[in-house]
Image (cartoon, rainbow, N blue to C red; front, side, top):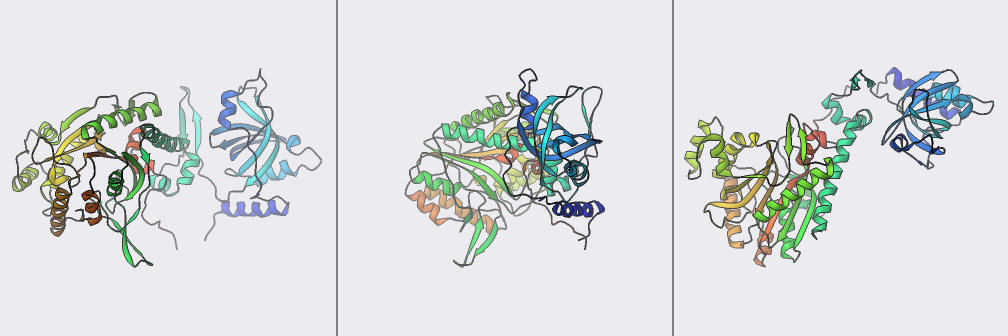
Length: 508
């Protein structure tokens, strides 16, 4: 491994600290009593508070001025200026702690712990006067130098920012250090999940866990990841959805269950797709898809309020309003609205011709339902910016949804589309085991035609349905895509701490 001049120098400093009897990686607890944000928000010179505080964090800048220095400490809440005086941190005759350690052995990115008291400088900046300083971690790699300044209008100007997406996603740890707004994105993502969890728990629904390794994959139209269990000598699949297991729990007697699940689909990658993703699935007995639409509106409106204090959220150039009620179209109404073509009575050959006339290339292996989905995806979805429910899908597209009570050939299903992408999918769940078996068998035929995303037949799930599942409404919401919208993020990689990446190219 070739080291840069800076990396070699930092390793030398580490050795010198050890020679001085200073452990650059001490083991003992360093008790922190305040944070940068807390002091900056609450210090009052008249109250004379924060006069005995300990803080810890990274050294992010330093201005040495002889016997005293100003520096900047960054903890998890933000940055605060610190004032370091030689005679305060090295009160005796030995001034090595200031002259050698602080001035020569510490670098930007090192972790330090300080004790001191808060004060306001002559220019009015809240700072901490350091009385004791301790080295907590010596960093061996230099951070990217990101320079910030405030212009005459009070706007922050960033120079030499760490902005390359390839580097940011691959080295998320560096991204989080030098781009504080990234940390805020992930705090909001956690807040979003907590908001939904609180909503569902207060409704009385039970949060559960179901298997990630499954002998059969099901619950969605997707290709799975495949693995092998040595002891059992059997093939297992990473789940593509948790739907079929959650429905088994409804059969077992729970009236409402939900799971925040990691799911895995062996498909293409884009700014909207990652092979590993998170969704929440919810199943509630004795309800239907109309009831579930009302729940989705109410829950997502609550999420917007909890994160932003308003139902209006800025996403790119758009202001998206999550206030209820949302617009509703049937799938055929949406296609006719955007294309002026009524496809509701068309069979497969005519649908193929219609797709071609609209400039949509359709794989010959795809059946009627997938063709309709392609037409909708190309002609409607990108133009649905405000949250909109698309309802009543063709039966061929929805092997797990109940047939529509009034419209032959359709099922009781909806998707919520927002900012041009699906954020949730829901059904009145199919609970007729005879119908479900026939749908699975149709999927097997599509698989024989070459549809790699066709579902497999799950005999145990059918056995569970034969014991009887009550009328049930089911829902899946993509946490990653909803997080993109709620944090105004351009790519799914921006809301995943560690998105999947191509192997890193390393120099020999």
